[in-house]
Length: 307
Image (cartoon, rainbow, N blue to C red):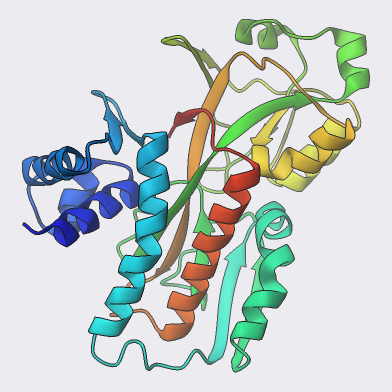
């Protein structure tokens, strides 16, 4: 296999987060994918991925390398595929995003995107739902778990760390947790996921140790903006993506707790309909989401354990 083919395989592993998922997508064996990545690493003289029995994560050098290669391979595909690069970006695109992600990542960069594509119109639904794309007229949607619906395809975006925070007045009143198990004695604000309307456990990692904290919040909501508003009012401890907490942490409205512990990093997925090759408009918006996440990542490193 040539080096370009090896790079494509490595990019697919990074996109999907595992050798097995990349093998299924590429219709190869898991062994062939693993061997291809190993050969690429040998040729480059650096490790692109760290592996263990449970997960695969990019090394710092590997992430930097793939970030440089990804747009080059994407541009090459656009040139080589017949007619692909000549398709105009036009029409009306309907997308669904969470309000917090839209405000933190998309809205600040949307004017430049619209200026690049003057013939494109956008309809943006801000929602915490997990819409079934086969039943509703949504072209692109954001997910925080790997989509399983057969009518959808997806592009894996960045993984961002969750960060536990609380308002200064809450910490002054209730004390500052020194260990994840201390959270069992604190008021917490839980987010109800759009996938099963339940709060999920929180996982903390340090030096090979893993602590699972069950969801037992006094208040549970299905809107992350409302969760954040309650945290600012001193109603308890809340964990959210670091990218969505940046302004609150910088202003002092919220303080990070347990800084010596990592929380699970959740990847983001851009989901679109599995109806043949995506349109030029869908591809352009997927590229925009990926580029925007990469730009945000420069300011908010994706620290933590990968999900």
